[in-house]
Amino acid sequence: MQPPVDSNASGNVSIPAAPGPATIPASILAAAGLTSAYVAQPNAGAPQVRYISPTNATQVLIGGHGFTATTPVYVKNVRVTGVQFVSGGFLIVPIPAGTTAADIRVGDGGGPVTAGRIDDTDSRIIYSGFSLQSGRTFGDLNGDIHFATANGSTATLTFTGTGITVYGEQNTDQGDIGISIDGAAQQTVSTLPTDGLRHANVSVYSRTGLSAGTHTIVVTKLSGNYAVLDGFAVLNTGPTTIRMDDTDSRITYSGFSLQSGRTFGDLNGDIHFATANGSTATLTFTGTGITVYGEQNTDQGDIGISIDGAAQQTVSTLPTDGVRHANVSVYNRTGLSAGTTPSWSPNCPATTPCSTASP
Image (tube, rainbow, N blue to C red; front, side, top):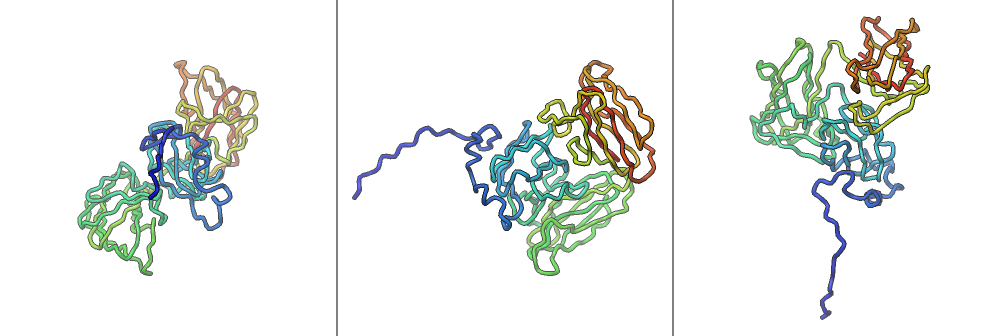
């Protein structure tokens, strides 16, 4: 019989249950997981998220697999800039104040998800009898769903819009769900697949033509082993506004520079700024109006706005109260003819950060 071996462990560092971006040295994170040669193999599949650190900070640590230096990350359907690629298993992502884990989506390369999409983890959804299941790999939005096994379990959402779509799953272990809007008679919807295969993150019910205003939808489990909810999409057929961050590739800059990692409340924590008079930012857009978002501060001055080559309008970005105001509307124009507007161009002569939004 061999004598016992004296094993000693020392120099260990305790790691909290929910480590943040600065908890574990980047060198250790970078060495973890697959090497770069194997991260983006053709059959590796879409990036998968397994962990998101607490969001009560200015940045989060995202753990998973399949990440690359070009993997897109979205917060509330807006692509984030300044993402730090640590390794195939870790990303460090700057987030704006008020972000929740449900607001963060990694990968898919296809841009934002369906307009008005609300994930199943959204706090506006009230559940009775449903449970959360995370870390799924079937293609659910953000890799999670809420599910119920007891008939009569409900998911309730109050929303403002003219239509609603329910996203869930079709599978052979499921059955019927009931849909009721604004207290009307319940409509029965089957979530059994016609081909006998699982279909995740699919529309199982859609309703349009609601009156403009606030409505309440209730989804109820009626039969089957499971009912699965992957969220909703709210439709609003009235006037809509599409926000474009200053990093959007559709904006053409001359004389402007990017500044990231700001903490003044800018959208996604970044702005473009110029110091030379005559610097321009140009956007061609389709819509009936345009709003320019920027900053008001005492070190700024006037900008010039020209739409479709018309005479330039001078707009002051000096604050009336002498205090900095970030991510504010500095110019707004409505009543344009419907269609594609050749360009608007703010001529920014001071250190004015410009970002854009257009209806």
